[in-house]
Length: 292
Image 1 (cartoon, rainbow, N blue to C red):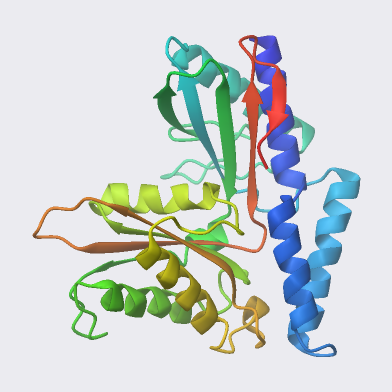
Image 2 (tube, rainbow, N blue to C red):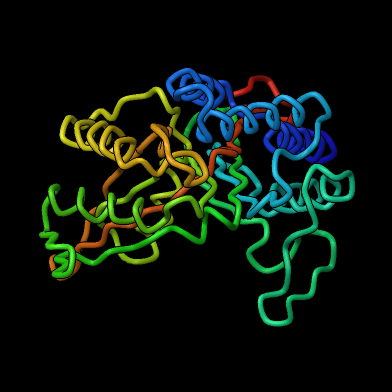
């Protein structure tokens, strides 16, 4: 239990303070792409300095360390109750050490007990597999970008969006337009086509576990991802909404089966502080490999 708690605490520290390599590469490429001397370029330079400073000082990249989301691929027989308890201990200690800000509050009273623990905090998604290793991925999802997520029910008469990929394209781009700079762009979209209202949003966030440079194995979805990324970056919204060529760093789309009466498109938005990391653990809970 102690080894597992310490491993999860290190996962939290690194996720909070260090941008993954694929995200760092995308931000640097965006900085090269923006015209120097513009507000957009200045915004990206500030972002890059923030990234470097947070890593050097091992401090949170953003004052909003967000919702703590654990995605656990677990072997048969893993004690999920014991794992969750070790994770909660890790969250409590990581908060005490300053790796996480004290920003989880009671939904009704707004009271903050300073631990980041409570109903739904942290959140766990357990998935069983037949491999001996345990793989844990962590997302720290800030509130600013969470606020600009959106869910659409097709057909949408106002947007003239039908129940097809062209209609999906219209509503996804509408979500980008509605967000403008409020989600701390440049952002990353996680999208689910299908599912119900709950599973659609949940699966849209699972898309954030993908690397930015990967390509969707479904040709139609791959084409849609690339098209939306290109089109969104031609809208002129830019970093933080200041204008420029970099509105999005990536678009990731997945699908779930739906019932014929419903056609939901759920869009989750991730800010530039794309805090996602993962580890592989041995049977004792020690880190054997980093996943990103």
